[in-house]
Image (cartoon, rainbow, N blue to C red):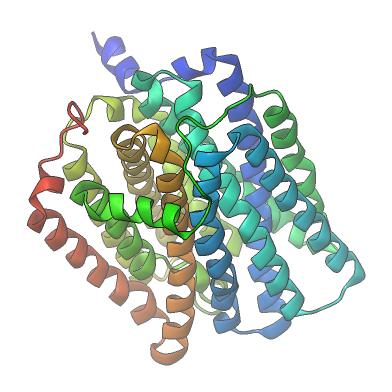
Length: 411
Protein backbone atom coordinates (compact mmCIF):
# COMPACT_ATOMS: atom_id res chain seq x y z
CA UNK A 1 0.00 0.00 0.00
CA UNK A 2 2.77 2.44 0.94
CA UNK A 3 4.71 1.44 -2.16
CA UNK A 4 1.68 2.15 -4.35
CA UNK A 5 1.21 5.57 -2.76
CA UNK A 6 4.86 6.44 -3.31
CA UNK A 7 4.59 5.33 -6.94
CA UNK A 8 1.56 7.58 -7.44
CA UNK A 9 3.68 10.59 -6.47
CA UNK A 10 6.69 9.64 -8.57
CA UNK A 11 7.22 11.45 -11.87
CA UNK A 12 5.11 9.98 -14.71
CA UNK A 13 7.46 8.77 -17.47
CA UNK A 14 4.79 7.39 -19.82
CA UNK A 15 5.36 10.10 -22.52
CA UNK A 16 8.92 8.81 -22.97
CA UNK A 17 7.51 5.71 -24.69
CA UNK A 18 6.78 7.93 -27.72
CA UNK A 19 9.99 8.05 -29.86
CA UNK A 20 9.55 11.56 -31.27
CA UNK A 21 8.88 13.01 -27.83
CA UNK A 22 11.73 10.99 -26.29
CA UNK A 23 14.30 12.35 -28.76
CA UNK A 24 13.05 15.90 -28.33
CA UNK A 25 13.08 15.55 -24.56
CA UNK A 26 16.65 14.21 -24.44
CA UNK A 27 17.99 16.91 -26.78
CA UNK A 28 16.27 19.73 -24.91
CA UNK A 29 17.51 18.37 -21.57
CA UNK A 30 21.11 18.61 -22.78
CA UNK A 31 20.51 22.02 -24.37
CA UNK A 32 19.16 23.48 -21.12
CA UNK A 33 22.45 22.69 -19.39
CA UNK A 34 24.35 24.61 -22.08
CA UNK A 35 21.84 27.46 -22.11
CA UNK A 36 22.17 27.88 -18.36
CA UNK A 37 25.95 27.91 -18.65
CA UNK A 38 25.63 30.90 -20.98
CA UNK A 39 22.92 32.58 -18.88
CA UNK A 40 25.27 32.52 -15.89
CA UNK A 41 28.41 33.34 -17.85
CA UNK A 42 27.10 36.48 -19.59
CA UNK A 43 26.07 38.39 -16.42
CA UNK A 44 29.23 37.29 -14.61
CA UNK A 45 31.32 38.50 -17.55
CA UNK A 46 29.39 41.79 -17.61
CA UNK A 47 29.93 42.24 -13.86
CA UNK A 48 33.64 41.51 -14.22
CA UNK A 49 33.93 44.19 -16.89
CA UNK A 50 31.77 46.91 -15.29
CA UNK A 51 31.48 45.97 -11.56
CA UNK A 52 27.85 47.18 -11.68
CA UNK A 53 24.66 45.31 -10.70
CA UNK A 54 22.75 47.81 -12.83
CA UNK A 55 24.64 46.62 -15.91
CA UNK A 56 23.83 43.03 -14.93
CA UNK A 57 20.17 44.03 -14.77
CA UNK A 58 20.46 45.64 -18.21
CA UNK A 59 21.40 42.24 -19.64
CA UNK A 60 17.76 41.31 -19.08
CA UNK A 61 16.48 44.56 -20.57
CA UNK A 62 18.34 44.25 -23.87
CA UNK A 63 16.85 40.81 -24.37
CA UNK A 64 13.32 41.93 -23.53
CA UNK A 65 12.33 43.78 -26.72
CA UNK A 66 13.39 40.88 -29.04
CA UNK A 67 11.50 38.44 -26.82
CA UNK A 68 8.32 40.54 -26.97
CA UNK A 69 8.44 41.09 -30.74
CA UNK A 70 9.69 37.69 -31.84
CA UNK A 71 7.73 35.83 -29.18
CA UNK A 72 4.45 37.27 -30.44
CA UNK A 73 5.26 37.00 -34.14
CA UNK A 74 6.94 33.63 -33.62
CA UNK A 75 3.63 32.37 -32.29
CA UNK A 76 1.86 33.65 -35.40
CA UNK A 77 4.43 31.93 -37.63
CA UNK A 78 3.95 28.70 -35.64
CA UNK A 79 0.22 28.82 -36.51
CA UNK A 80 0.88 29.50 -40.18
CA UNK A 81 3.89 27.39 -41.27
CA UNK A 82 5.39 23.96 -40.63
CA UNK A 83 6.37 24.02 -36.95
CA UNK A 84 9.25 21.59 -37.40
CA UNK A 85 10.95 23.81 -39.98
CA UNK A 86 10.41 26.95 -37.92
CA UNK A 87 11.82 25.31 -34.80
CA UNK A 88 14.90 24.17 -36.71
CA UNK A 89 15.63 27.61 -38.17
CA UNK A 90 15.20 29.46 -34.87
CA UNK A 91 17.32 26.91 -32.99
CA UNK A 92 20.06 27.27 -35.59
CA UNK A 93 20.12 31.05 -35.04
CA UNK A 94 20.47 30.57 -31.28
CA UNK A 95 23.36 28.14 -31.81
CA UNK A 96 25.20 30.53 -34.17
CA UNK A 97 25.00 33.36 -31.62
CA UNK A 98 26.54 31.07 -29.01
CA UNK A 99 29.47 30.54 -31.39
CA UNK A 100 29.82 34.32 -31.66
CA UNK A 101 29.91 34.61 -27.86
CA UNK A 102 32.71 32.06 -27.94
CA UNK A 103 34.63 34.14 -30.50
CA UNK A 104 34.40 37.36 -28.46
CA UNK A 105 35.61 35.53 -25.37
CA UNK A 106 38.58 33.99 -27.17
CA UNK A 107 39.45 37.39 -28.66
CA UNK A 108 39.11 39.00 -25.19
CA UNK A 109 37.20 41.98 -26.63
CA UNK A 110 36.11 43.13 -23.14
CA UNK A 111 32.99 44.87 -24.51
CA UNK A 112 29.74 45.10 -22.56
CA UNK A 113 28.05 46.63 -25.61
CA UNK A 114 28.90 43.62 -27.78
CA UNK A 115 27.58 41.26 -25.13
CA UNK A 116 24.33 43.23 -25.03
CA UNK A 117 24.01 42.99 -28.83
CA UNK A 118 24.58 39.23 -28.89
CA UNK A 119 22.11 38.71 -26.05
CA UNK A 120 19.49 40.64 -28.06
CA UNK A 121 19.93 38.48 -31.17
CA UNK A 122 19.99 35.27 -29.18
CA UNK A 123 16.81 36.32 -27.38
CA UNK A 124 15.05 36.68 -30.74
CA UNK A 125 15.96 33.13 -31.75
CA UNK A 126 15.02 31.82 -28.32
CA UNK A 127 11.62 33.53 -28.45
CA UNK A 128 10.67 31.94 -31.77
CA UNK A 129 11.94 28.48 -30.83
CA UNK A 130 10.17 28.57 -27.45
CA UNK A 131 6.88 29.67 -29.01
CA UNK A 132 7.15 26.83 -31.49
CA UNK A 133 8.31 24.06 -29.15
CA UNK A 134 5.44 24.65 -26.73
CA UNK A 135 2.96 24.30 -29.61
CA UNK A 136 4.67 21.09 -30.77
CA UNK A 137 4.22 19.07 -27.56
CA UNK A 138 0.43 18.53 -27.90
CA UNK A 139 1.07 17.12 -31.39
CA UNK A 140 3.53 14.53 -30.04
CA UNK A 141 1.66 13.16 -27.00
CA UNK A 142 -2.02 12.32 -26.27
CA UNK A 143 -3.98 14.98 -24.42
CA UNK A 144 -4.15 12.93 -21.22
CA UNK A 145 -0.35 12.82 -21.15
CA UNK A 146 0.18 16.56 -21.56
CA UNK A 147 0.55 17.28 -17.79
CA UNK A 148 3.08 14.43 -17.51
CA UNK A 149 5.00 15.65 -20.57
CA UNK A 150 5.10 19.17 -19.16
CA UNK A 151 6.30 17.88 -15.80
CA UNK A 152 9.06 15.91 -17.54
CA UNK A 153 10.07 18.96 -19.57
CA UNK A 154 10.28 21.16 -16.50
CA UNK A 155 12.11 18.45 -14.57
CA UNK A 156 14.72 18.19 -17.33
CA UNK A 157 14.89 21.96 -17.49
CA UNK A 158 15.46 22.30 -13.78
CA UNK A 159 18.10 19.55 -13.76
CA UNK A 160 19.86 21.63 -16.39
CA UNK A 161 19.40 24.73 -14.28
CA UNK A 162 21.19 22.97 -11.43
CA UNK A 163 23.96 21.44 -13.51
CA UNK A 164 24.41 24.46 -15.78
CA UNK A 165 25.33 27.05 -13.12
CA UNK A 166 27.59 24.58 -11.32
CA UNK A 167 29.34 23.76 -14.59
CA UNK A 168 29.51 27.48 -15.41
CA UNK A 169 31.12 28.21 -12.04
CA UNK A 170 33.75 25.53 -12.63
CA UNK A 171 34.50 26.67 -16.18
CA UNK A 172 34.56 30.40 -15.40
CA UNK A 173 37.16 29.77 -12.70
CA UNK A 174 39.60 28.38 -15.28
CA UNK A 175 42.02 30.55 -17.26
CA UNK A 176 40.04 31.82 -20.28
CA UNK A 177 37.01 30.35 -18.52
CA UNK A 178 34.43 32.40 -20.38
CA UNK A 179 35.53 30.80 -23.65
CA UNK A 180 35.25 27.29 -22.20
CA UNK A 181 31.75 28.08 -20.93
CA UNK A 182 30.45 29.28 -24.30
CA UNK A 183 32.08 26.32 -26.07
CA UNK A 184 30.28 23.91 -23.73
CA UNK A 185 26.95 25.55 -24.57
CA UNK A 186 27.57 25.30 -28.31
CA UNK A 187 28.47 21.62 -28.04
CA UNK A 188 25.48 20.62 -25.92
CA UNK A 189 23.00 22.51 -28.11
CA UNK A 190 23.80 20.49 -31.24
CA UNK A 191 21.49 17.68 -30.09
CA UNK A 192 18.48 19.94 -30.56
CA UNK A 193 19.31 20.37 -34.23
CA UNK A 194 19.51 16.59 -34.71
CA UNK A 195 16.30 15.84 -32.80
CA UNK A 196 14.39 18.49 -34.73
CA UNK A 197 15.53 17.06 -38.05
CA UNK A 198 14.06 13.70 -36.94
CA UNK A 199 10.63 15.16 -36.14
CA UNK A 200 7.78 14.46 -38.56
CA UNK A 201 6.38 17.31 -40.62
CA UNK A 202 4.11 19.46 -38.44
CA UNK A 203 2.02 21.63 -40.81
CA UNK A 204 -0.28 24.24 -39.33
CA UNK A 205 -3.84 23.11 -38.57
CA UNK A 206 -6.11 25.93 -39.63
CA UNK A 207 -4.19 28.77 -41.25
CA UNK A 208 -3.52 31.83 -39.14
CA UNK A 209 -4.19 33.96 -42.16
CA UNK A 210 -1.86 36.78 -43.11
CA UNK A 211 1.18 36.92 -40.85
CA UNK A 212 0.87 40.36 -39.33
CA UNK A 213 -0.42 42.49 -36.50
CA UNK A 214 -4.01 41.31 -36.94
CA UNK A 215 -3.03 37.71 -36.19
CA UNK A 216 -1.10 38.83 -33.12
CA UNK A 217 -4.13 40.79 -31.91
CA UNK A 218 -6.40 37.76 -32.34
CA UNK A 219 -4.30 35.90 -29.80
CA UNK A 220 -4.23 38.83 -27.37
CA UNK A 221 -8.00 39.32 -27.68
CA UNK A 222 -8.55 35.63 -26.91
CA UNK A 223 -6.56 36.05 -23.69
CA UNK A 224 -8.40 39.23 -22.76
CA UNK A 225 -11.76 37.48 -23.09
CA UNK A 226 -10.77 34.53 -20.91
CA UNK A 227 -10.13 35.41 -17.27
CA UNK A 228 -8.48 32.05 -16.54
CA UNK A 229 -5.75 32.56 -19.12
CA UNK A 230 -5.35 36.25 -18.32
CA UNK A 231 -4.85 35.60 -14.61
CA UNK A 232 -2.34 32.82 -15.24
CA UNK A 233 -0.23 35.29 -17.24
CA UNK A 234 -0.67 38.15 -14.75
CA UNK A 235 0.42 35.96 -11.83
CA UNK A 236 3.61 34.98 -13.59
CA UNK A 237 4.42 38.59 -14.47
CA UNK A 238 3.93 39.72 -10.87
CA UNK A 239 5.99 36.84 -9.49
CA UNK A 240 8.89 37.45 -11.84
CA UNK A 241 8.81 41.24 -11.72
CA UNK A 242 8.68 41.55 -7.93
CA UNK A 243 10.14 38.28 -6.66
CA UNK A 244 12.98 37.38 -9.03
CA UNK A 245 16.31 38.23 -7.31
CA UNK A 246 18.59 36.78 -10.02
CA UNK A 247 20.29 40.07 -10.91
CA UNK A 248 21.27 40.47 -7.26
CA UNK A 249 23.12 37.15 -7.00
CA UNK A 250 26.57 38.46 -8.05
CA UNK A 251 26.40 41.34 -5.56
CA UNK A 252 25.01 39.14 -2.76
CA UNK A 253 27.70 36.51 -3.26
CA UNK A 254 30.46 39.13 -3.34
CA UNK A 255 29.38 41.42 -0.50
CA UNK A 256 27.16 39.53 1.95
CA UNK A 257 27.34 35.76 1.60
CA UNK A 258 31.00 35.33 0.61
CA UNK A 259 30.15 32.16 -1.29
CA UNK A 260 29.92 30.74 -4.77
CA UNK A 261 27.59 32.61 -7.10
CA UNK A 262 26.99 29.31 -8.91
CA UNK A 263 25.27 27.92 -5.79
CA UNK A 264 22.80 30.82 -5.77
CA UNK A 265 22.01 30.40 -9.46
CA UNK A 266 21.48 26.64 -9.08
CA UNK A 267 19.56 26.52 -5.77
CA UNK A 268 16.15 27.41 -7.21
CA UNK A 269 16.51 24.79 -9.90
CA UNK A 270 17.66 22.19 -7.34
CA UNK A 271 14.36 22.59 -5.50
CA UNK A 272 12.49 22.28 -8.78
CA UNK A 273 14.30 19.01 -9.52
CA UNK A 274 13.22 17.49 -6.21
CA UNK A 275 9.66 18.67 -6.77
CA UNK A 276 9.71 17.30 -10.31
CA UNK A 277 10.73 13.85 -9.08
CA UNK A 278 7.59 13.88 -6.92
CA UNK A 279 5.29 15.44 -9.54
CA UNK A 280 2.97 12.49 -10.19
CA UNK A 281 0.24 14.20 -8.17
CA UNK A 282 0.09 17.24 -10.46
CA UNK A 283 -1.91 15.47 -13.16
CA UNK A 284 -4.63 14.63 -10.61
CA UNK A 285 -5.24 18.22 -9.47
CA UNK A 286 -8.62 19.53 -10.66
CA UNK A 287 -8.68 23.03 -9.11
CA UNK A 288 -5.67 24.20 -11.09
CA UNK A 289 -6.39 27.90 -10.60
CA UNK A 290 -6.27 27.57 -6.82
CA UNK A 291 -3.18 25.37 -7.03
CA UNK A 292 -1.40 27.88 -9.30
CA UNK A 293 -2.15 30.78 -6.93
CA UNK A 294 -0.92 28.86 -3.88
CA UNK A 295 2.29 27.88 -5.68
CA UNK A 296 3.04 31.48 -6.73
CA UNK A 297 2.43 32.83 -3.21
CA UNK A 298 4.74 30.16 -1.78
CA UNK A 299 7.39 31.18 -4.32
CA UNK A 300 7.24 34.86 -3.34
CA UNK A 301 7.22 34.23 0.41
CA UNK A 302 10.25 31.93 0.36
CA UNK A 303 12.14 34.34 -1.91
CA UNK A 304 11.43 37.12 0.59
CA UNK A 305 12.74 35.01 3.48
CA UNK A 306 15.90 34.20 1.51
CA UNK A 307 16.59 37.90 1.13
CA UNK A 308 16.74 38.35 4.91
CA UNK A 309 19.16 35.44 5.48
CA UNK A 310 22.89 36.03 5.90
CA UNK A 311 24.18 32.44 5.67
CA UNK A 312 24.67 31.06 2.19
CA UNK A 313 23.41 27.57 3.12
CA UNK A 314 20.15 29.04 4.46
CA UNK A 315 19.71 31.25 1.41
CA UNK A 316 20.27 28.22 -0.83
CA UNK A 317 17.74 26.15 1.16
CA UNK A 318 15.05 28.83 0.93
CA UNK A 319 15.72 29.34 -2.77
CA UNK A 320 15.34 25.58 -3.24
CA UNK A 321 11.91 25.69 -1.55
CA UNK A 322 10.98 28.53 -3.88
CA UNK A 323 12.10 26.40 -6.80
CA UNK A 324 9.78 23.57 -5.75
CA UNK A 325 6.85 25.99 -5.78
CA UNK A 326 8.00 27.38 -9.11
CA UNK A 327 7.93 23.96 -10.81
CA UNK A 328 4.35 23.36 -9.70
CA UNK A 329 3.23 26.79 -10.88
CA UNK A 330 5.01 26.39 -14.22
CA UNK A 331 3.40 23.01 -14.95
CA UNK A 332 -0.05 24.31 -14.03
CA UNK A 333 0.35 27.41 -16.23
CA UNK A 334 1.54 25.44 -19.25
CA UNK A 335 -1.12 22.75 -18.85
CA UNK A 336 -3.91 25.31 -18.57
CA UNK A 337 -2.65 26.98 -21.75
CA UNK A 338 -2.25 23.79 -23.78
CA UNK A 339 -5.64 22.33 -22.82
CA UNK A 340 -7.68 25.55 -22.82
CA UNK A 341 -6.61 26.92 -26.22
CA UNK A 342 -7.68 25.49 -29.63
CA UNK A 343 -4.85 24.26 -31.87
CA UNK A 344 -5.27 27.00 -34.49
CA UNK A 345 -4.47 29.57 -31.78
CA UNK A 346 -1.96 27.52 -29.81
CA UNK A 347 1.13 28.96 -31.48
CA UNK A 348 0.03 32.54 -30.88
CA UNK A 349 -0.89 31.88 -27.26
CA UNK A 350 2.37 30.00 -26.78
CA UNK A 351 4.10 33.10 -28.16
CA UNK A 352 2.45 35.25 -25.50
CA UNK A 353 3.44 32.65 -22.92
CA UNK A 354 7.05 32.89 -24.10
CA UNK A 355 6.97 36.68 -23.81
CA UNK A 356 5.61 36.46 -20.26
CA UNK A 357 7.83 33.62 -19.03
CA UNK A 358 11.04 34.88 -20.62
CA UNK A 359 10.31 38.60 -20.49
CA UNK A 360 9.08 38.68 -16.90
CA UNK A 361 12.41 37.63 -15.35
CA UNK A 362 14.23 40.16 -17.52
CA UNK A 363 11.99 42.94 -16.24
CA UNK A 364 12.64 41.51 -12.79
CA UNK A 365 16.39 41.73 -13.42
CA UNK A 366 16.08 45.39 -14.38
CA UNK A 367 13.82 46.16 -11.43
CA UNK A 368 16.10 44.38 -8.97
CA UNK A 369 19.31 45.95 -10.29
CA UNK A 370 17.91 49.47 -10.36
CA UNK A 371 16.19 49.09 -6.99
CA UNK A 372 19.32 47.71 -5.33
CA UNK A 373 21.27 50.71 -6.58
CA UNK A 374 18.68 53.07 -5.08
CA UNK A 375 17.55 51.30 -1.88
CA UNK A 376 20.02 48.54 -1.08
CA UNK A 377 20.06 44.78 -1.42
CA UNK A 378 17.52 43.72 1.23
CA UNK A 379 14.68 45.99 0.14
CA UNK A 380 15.22 45.20 -3.53
CA UNK A 381 15.18 41.46 -2.76
CA UNK A 382 12.70 40.91 0.10
CA UNK A 383 10.53 44.01 0.15
CA UNK A 384 9.43 43.59 -3.45
CA UNK A 385 8.80 39.85 -2.99
CA UNK A 386 6.46 40.48 -0.05
CA UNK A 387 4.47 42.95 -2.16
CA UNK A 388 4.24 40.34 -4.93
CA UNK A 389 2.84 37.68 -2.58
CA UNK A 390 0.11 40.04 -1.36
CA UNK A 391 -0.89 41.09 -4.88
CA UNK A 392 -1.16 37.51 -6.15
CA UNK A 393 -3.24 36.34 -3.19
CA UNK A 394 -5.72 39.21 -3.50
CA UNK A 395 -6.08 38.88 -7.27
CA UNK A 396 -6.60 35.10 -7.19
CA UNK A 397 -9.49 35.33 -4.75
CA UNK A 398 -11.03 38.36 -6.48
CA UNK A 399 -11.23 36.80 -9.98
CA UNK A 400 -13.87 34.13 -9.46
CA UNK A 401 -13.63 32.27 -12.82
CA UNK A 402 -9.94 31.69 -12.16
CA UNK A 403 -10.51 30.64 -8.55
CA UNK A 404 -13.23 28.15 -9.62
CA UNK A 405 -11.35 26.80 -12.67
CA UNK A 406 -11.70 23.00 -12.98
CA UNK A 407 -9.39 20.98 -15.23
CA UNK A 408 -12.19 18.51 -16.01
CA UNK A 409 -13.95 21.17 -18.10
CA UNK A 410 -11.13 23.49 -19.29
CA UNK A 411 -13.07 25.21 -22.06
